[in-house]
Image (tube, rainbow, N blue to C red; front, side):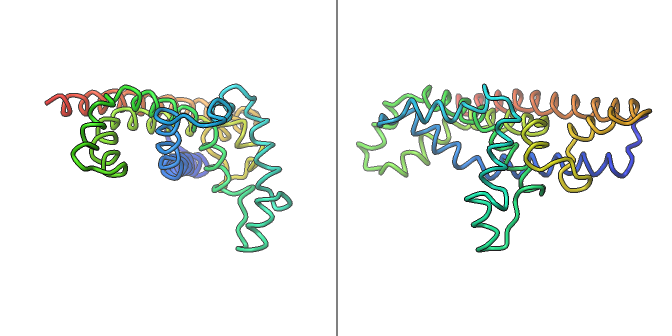
Length: 230
């Protein structure tokens, strides 16, 4: 039952690849935005916060269509990338990573922001009075104390990326070996007569991966919290 076909194995590997790169590339921006929302007051802060969380409430198909308009070969950004650097994003695994990153980004930012807000600002102020600059204070005080929240945000974003479907299929289609991730592979299986067994295999794998990510996040976050307490 759990012997994967080559196409199913490709979908599994591609899903892990897409989720990994989507989280890795969005993490620095996520930390920066979370810090700005937690520590700074600026004009348009509520608007920025709303835009960051917009993918949570919009239909994923809408997000995928917006990405297609912006990053397609005829789009303002995608067209420029293609004409200038010969880079194509739409209908590639890179586009799938971008779609996953956009959909998972709000979860990452929210987890990191809540963790930063729980850091005692008196510790940061003490570091500054001892001569530490803003960057050194952030690197030596804020960032280590925020580590459990960053880890939680990373794991949540990774798990969300593994399950992304609507924005992905709209933006990069369902191309075997290129953009067909696990959710798209499940969709393809249930569309084919007699594909129920293959769909079940992929569903079980998806559940196991998601649960492993969530449980791993909980365990690692607790270990980090204990180390900081010690």
